[in-house]
Length: 186
Image (tube, rainbow, N blue to C red; front, side):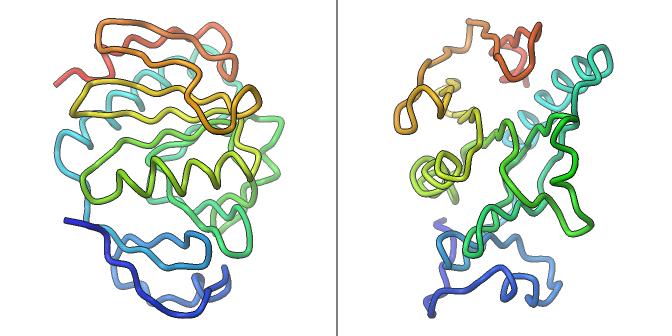
């Protein structure tokens, strides 16, 4: 099932804020309103696994905070996204406001699903790079791969493809080693 796109003139963050609280999962991408169904069970298990991995690290190294969707991230006047997970360093805590994050997180994690994979892989990735996100993990549950993007090194291509039996580290969270097997654990 593809996400529903409402065709209209370009909307703004103010239009987004004015949406009714109807329980729908909305994002504003380049002025277009997108709605997607709730993710499937395995998607949620992966998000849970990642939250446990990052949560454990942050308890030992309190360098920032993790936020899980739904959490609005205002990247521009026409881009309000809800990554599955994000990390924000303590030094940038001023970006947090009552209605969400206003600016680019240090790290965004998108777990692909049938309904949103094309949006995540193309348009949102491009927006994240443009907005100043340092790093993005694009997690593919079907192929059990993690595409690591370091936007300072390459705003278009992943700098590494992590398979299900590999580990990786990130400069955004020094000292953290992530096991892909733990990410994809059922």
